[in-house]
Length: 259
Image (tube, rainbow, N blue to C red; front, side):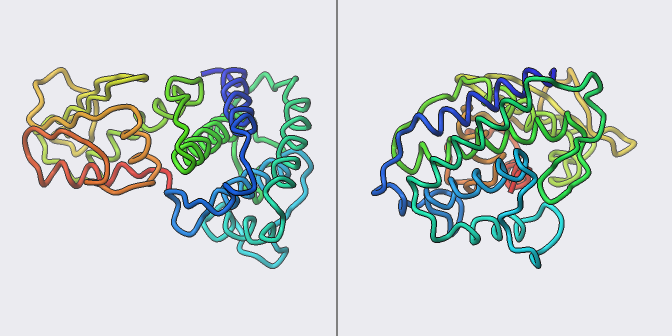
């Protein structure tokens, strides 16, 4: 995908968050992210968008280095006392500044981005793709928390599903340890559908195959995104399994590629 595709998808998702018209009474609603409320999810978005837009760092200066759970939590903690309406105003302002910066994109998507969260050495392609996934996943976190679903077929949904789909050989071959000669099909239905069959070869490498699957996992777009984002565990979303149930469980557990 092009950098412009990522920018357009990111802009669509962050504006969708702002268009949710979150109220002060929504602030303490729980989300699928352990320990994070609606207000915390918005604070996280503010943290990263301000870092990218301004180079400013709202996380404590002596906090952990590198893009990690500790780093993102530090950003949320630094904004703990900011009311939800003020966070939304800051998010809107940061998104406007960042959108202006992204009007001109580099010719080389593999060039290092000059500003990244915690200074992580990402290319423009990786940075902008990750911002889409982060923004869309958090948009969905907020939607589930307030009971207002939607945008499962948005540009952000397509980027996110494709990103998680690309990880299937790693998940099936490395994390789940599928045996050689046991093709596994993952079928996703609904708004962003796909079917991918992966098998581990005699050389231990996992890749696409035309062979008939011995185990098949079928789920809808939202369930695939929830599992891929590590929001819930197997058994907490509807998945139909045919074949080796133990292998299927390992695959579903390993789908969490974005904690």
